[in-house]
Image (tube, rainbow, N blue to C red):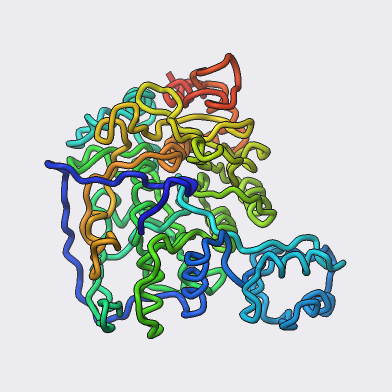
Length: 501
């Protein structure tokens, strides 16, 4: 999928250059079909892409007022022309997801429901978009770690520990070495092809825990699929910054390289939808740009991560429309003891809109919105500004060092193997060092620092936020400002701030 810069936090450049590490992992052959989303859900993503919608057609999130009975819920739903049944609602905590196949106009459905006395709020299911010195061979070009002094921070805390769990709400991180059978469109006919997947050689299987897919699966509350797979590369790139293996003579380094990573798939991309459309017998190619992160999946992911022991959550995603569902889920997760890092947005030159959930993070003690800086520690040209920006971290800037030396490099799936503009038969079992820029890349730096602090015993989300803020390097106007928030992260200073010498 070709992601646009107008999407919140994204891979802007993913390029392989001469000498880049390329790793092929063997996969066990299997006749098992690739699990795909339902035909109805795949068509919803395609229709959203074709019509340039920022929501899934026909899907609405509803919060009924406290004490409302199921019969009263039914009375509210009866205001809709299709008269959906309250018994068919799917629940995310106190939020109900309604799928109304009879009326794709989700904003209209939300307005009608919001007017009912039984309803506290109703909103479309909006789509968010993707915003010890190491001996790893490519560590030398990871300016993003050196410029904020991570090597000396690792002298204090060498990469956190296995009792610290960091959840990555994103496009997934592959958890299996397996080849699946998938049906796809060749341009003239359907063909069943082998599609190999492999775990990143820089994110060992033992480091991945309690993975779950809320984006592809429509079963709420548990993962019905045998695997989580990343067919975008975004989630793996983000997870690699947080916790890629270090001192293993492979690829680059990660920040909290001793922590566990919880892959929580809440976003789908081109191939997730293409394979589902083909499996349903619908000919043709899915539009480039199809995909996104439904609020329903994000809310489920936040609750799941917090309920299953994640002490840090990273969200490199967002959009310009506020969501009560998302705000409630953020508040729930922080209340359960999870610190949350949220990308601040990449649209400074496209009008600099307020971004969500980053704007919510600024109002919640224990969640932080993150701006991006380049290698000179100046604001990256794309990074949003505003009163909701709380902290800044390296995110890359091709105007500050170029497309090779100015971007953030990490190991992820080799993107040229699955570029839908050139590839019909993709594979996802090979990994390469790929370059990217965005607040997507900045946010996991903050999540990584939080993981180090958690392993030092600072586990209260508000205390983690306070420590990161109070130890930041002040940039821009004195004190908090709209470009850098409280400043650029200083991981060593933050760790020393808890009394470690």
